[in-house]
Length: 323
Image (cartoon, rainbow, N blue to C red; front, side, top):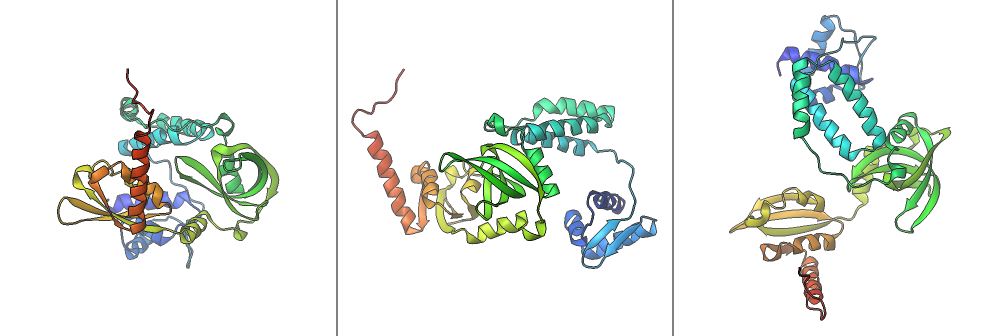
């Protein structure tokens, strides 16, 4: 990116937030802090009213840059975002994003509009898990409550006890993992932070009450706390290089950390997991093309799992299905 483009991009970035730190700009544009300081000074000399507060960051003082036309690559990136949102967000988010996307498309050049129209059917995302109808329109309301620090009333269906409880919660943030959205909130019933799967929220209402976010953990702080308190076990295994190409994406679901080549046809991989037996069940599918280095307990678990499978298929009366 040349300097003129970077100055324009910095100005646009400053418009997106109340306050922007120099470190944030340096990280985004891959430059040094000294370069960012020099760029900010150049914008000020050009007449842009940039305010600064020591230790806080930069902000614009009553200034707005006219709308900037999107490049074709930026417009294409929005299409990719739309495809992901279509499958990983609920109806409330999908409808709002679709409305915003129409507005963006309306200001594109005709050739760029035609480019998106041609690209649209050529980009697909696999079908997402079915969302229960009672929870297919909650994400916008939850986002609004987070932004306004609104206390929410939930009817929540617990998977463990198979019962519905009434909760008042102070929403901290939304977090997507395990193929679903999770509301992280402080539960007034339990007087502690809880993780609520959005697809198990049967009803959501605003209470009309607010809370102070200063008294609660941020989402980032909560996730860091959870990671620190989780007991993770290190597992080291060797995969035959013949099967490595089959695990490149899946390995991240099992706590993949790193890998290195070893002598022979092997690739050593390290995992950090809370549930070594679950990792073992996945490793079982690779048969003789995987070997356990550590821990010894997982080696014993693999023997038990293999015996369990063998006993199942040798059970009298168990017949293979045929046409």
